[in-house]
Length: 291
Image (tube, rainbow, N blue to C red):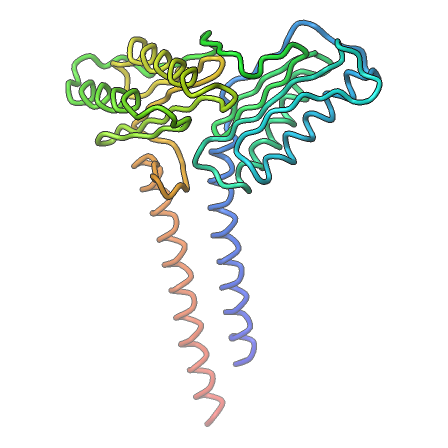
């Protein structure tokens, strides 16, 4: 009986540790891989062609490169390719992601864009943690400030404190010294992030981010959250924040933190009670067996 209880308590502890690990791993991956937007070009290619081989080679290169870098771009032209068969592409992970999370995000984005844009000559997909794009027309190093997607929360004009915080945090993002492709800031509960793709020059990145922040202020300044995605950059802010493991900042919504903390404490308390019960039962059985 004594041996059984000890083994059982160890099994419970092991299961508990696995559950906690899987829970937090899922939370992190789910946030990073959340879908933001996606789109495909109208032009299509025929299956089995050299162009398809170039597309597959490019997408594989994006995933492999994400294992050691947060950004890379490629021009793929396999042997036998004509000028029309060349494929251009890039990936950009959020600046705070480590190599492991970056690769997972890019792998997911590549898989989704492959499904979304089957046999199309170009496609782009944005997840919370990364962006991938490919096309048969070179877009690398080309500045593009066209609005791809924007969303705002409900307008709340009578919350002066929120309006002041929104303005402060977005103004801060715009005032960050040039040369930073990834920017974060916060004011009270409001947290913000902005980033451009690193194929742009420093001045082009600054120009793109300035425009994204300006439009975000204009469109969503009176909302508790807002997203402004341009072709080569974006700016976002929210009361709930954006998950990050960066040493530079840790942003997560108060509501999410409270929920996670409550669940974790509940699990710990439950296991602790169970272990105490098993320990007491074990001692009782030892005493009874010694009589």
